[in-house]
Length: 230
Length: 242
Image (cartoon, rainbow over all chains, first blue to last red; front, top):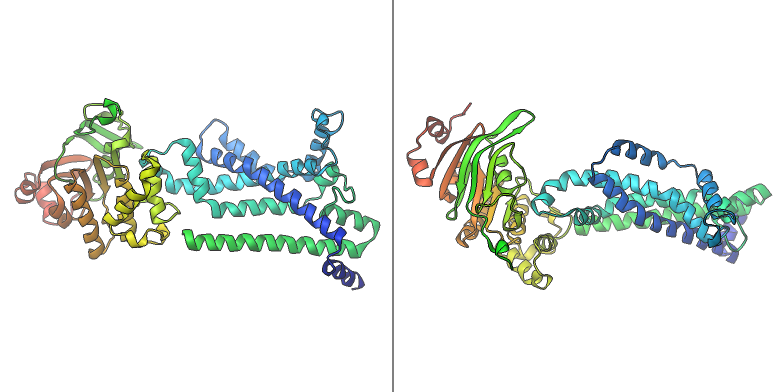
């Protein structure tokens, strides 16, 4: 109980160190979701609308990649970005940039797989009409992405959830450096192992609250969109 | 503008056109000429092949056998044709945005969009609902929006697949009024229906189909007053055809 009390105290006193950790967590995860969306949405739409050999197998692999283990992704990105790795000259290891890269790799398959399903369902409904209007392939993708935008928000949320909750990848490539690459999840892992349970608990509560707030905003946006756009 | 772009899609000529879907003949040796003039109404019981015929005329389906020509040419892109599907899909946008989308797809210059959109919505009686989400419109309003969207392509030929099916009498009348206006503006209308009353009200000539074949093709007055086949006589008498 004592731990909970001091956790809440930290939260409500808007402790600057805590706020910095929260801000970095949000910045890294939201940037990763943005990058993953730029990759995943067109990719998902493309797979939904294209017939090619090995498509079924590709979809199975894509769906499986939703469960990509974060520590493995962290390790791969670490190897890529380490001083002797192929991208070592970028000097990104142990920076927020490396964390964004790792989380983008984790999130892109989630967004692509869910977008593929959403777009494919909408395509069944739109196919004849778009054919009647002689819509070309690129415009078709743009149309479906736009008209599915509120459903696709759910895919982005799932991606954000995965990014915000994971610790395995960013702790490897970010290094959990105090004041630079420390996020809520890496700090919770550290504080728990150090035995500072109040801080860990406080961070955990903030993390859950942040995820709830982001989902609530997205939900409100979706409801408003459905009301005004149909 | 090249001569190609100005060339007419009419007449649409089908020569011995057949179409099979999984071994079943949906169209069986249809030969037909769609020429400029009053609306051609395609009638026949469900499953007669009306929808497939319209899709072949639109160029959405390549027939299994036979030849289709548009103004004497084969494989003409559908820039001068428009089709209203039996169940039109409303894009998840406002009524006006649905029209703008069609204008864009038809390559109409953006500067003309506002005036064209306003004109088309007024034409189908939806001016007051322009900002309403299209999917929130009633069934009849959606059909009228689909008509406006097809007209946005500035077509020479307009193919309508049972546009009044499952609409109440008032909504049906509104659609028929639009069809009359369209036909009066020298756009060739080809319309499928299984509503005989509607066929009588709108048809310049009639194509009567059964089992994927054209049984009769005649001016409306001739067909309704002196049908020349027993199938047509029985269909007009309201009997079930087998």
